[in-house]
Length: 139
Image 1 (cartoon, rainbow, N blue to C red):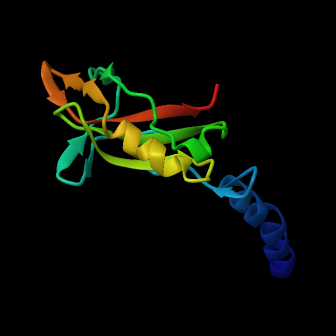
Image 2 (cartoon, helix red, strand yellow):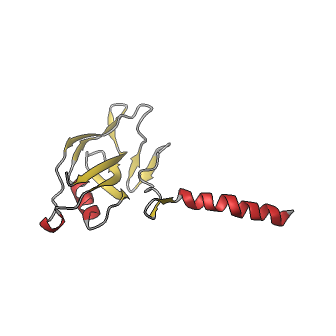
Image 3 (tube, rainbow, N blue to C red):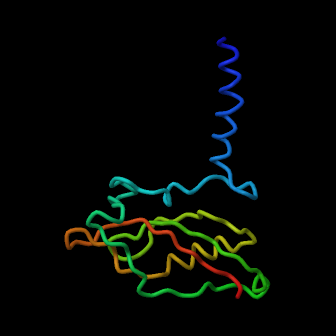
């Protein structure tokens, strides 16, 4: 009986856990920064608050297009960058949630770190909050 139960667990549960950590193309699961933040969490030296329940989202004030070298100008795709907009309206912590490779991921990270935001607000005070941003390459 125990062997049958163990075999069923291995047959059904383990493959489903592995599937949750993979996406098409062999990419690993979501970046923890982009995961739905349910409670305030310390990230680096700032307390990061989830958007909602009295916390307004950060708003992009000034964004720039990616500076793509000529040898990569023909490449197309979307990189999803997730990060934390700090109280000063800048992204200090960022990572790639969906990569496209060919050096474009690093360009996307450099690009969003130059963007300026109006920070999230909680009780009239600026707070750090997570964001998920798309950086598009090609037209």
